[in-house]
Image (cartoon, rainbow, N blue to C red; front, top):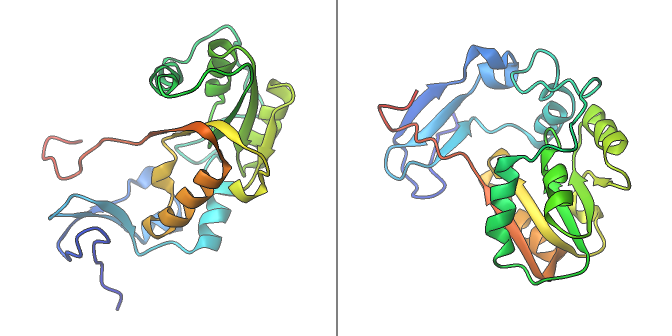
Length: 210
């Protein structure tokens, strides 16, 4: 039997939380969230295989029965709106970004694509890029944003990116992948580029958390 051990502090004491029924998928009905009682780090247990996880994100994550469903076939963005989350992310990151005439921007897991709307308005000239594996999302980005370039993996990008955004996407990676992931991010990031990361701040160990 595989024992759950915290990758951060090596403790084996956890608060175990069942996934909500809304997820409605065997990957989660047979698994739990384990929050370490010593350091608070949380993870899925048992681990999901890479092949199962890739299939989930490509085919299930945005499907109609998923709580993360987006109707990309009928989605139309108002290009005059400003997404305040991405605006605040860019505003923070811009303090550390050298001024350029043109920027390459990459969003890893763009969701509705509102970061692209904000990027076009916020920066003078910008080329849009995405890391995305869902076919319907890819088609939506291509028909909504002119000249956008879409990749399935960071390794497919063979030039430098000035601004990389990971807004609520880092937590979708396994902790054992992080060293490799950050090496890939570093390799694709331009010498004076910036990486902006936002992750959930919920503390499942807090008794007031719902």
